[in-house]
Amino acid sequence: NAAFDIWMLGIVLYAMVTAKFPFTGDSVIDDIIACRYQIPSNISPSLKHLLSQIFQPESTRISMVKILYHPWLLCENVSIDSLMLEPV
Image 1 (tube, helix red, strand yellow):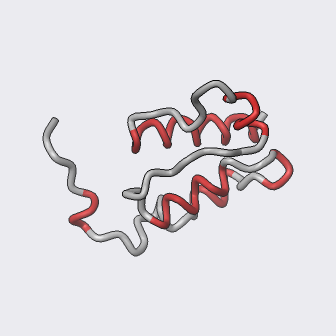
Image 2: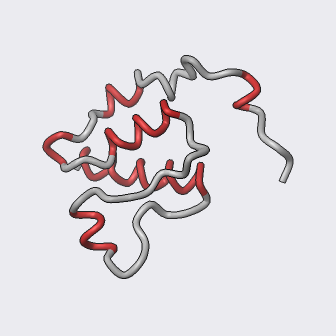
């Protein structure tokens, strides 16, 4: 199911950029059903938008084609400095 794959992509993307899972705690099932999650303030507006389009009910979830052309994935309006990673 493509919609499920997109949802899981969102989980992995969120975990990669925040080092946390988007849905945690005692009400995890309710949070998933309601698409309720917290995005840290240090996440770029473009990525926040992409995640908000991924974590939607299946009927309104972004398609894979739209993800591929999303500004965050195309690095539009992203400075080179923000892409530089610090050594681990």
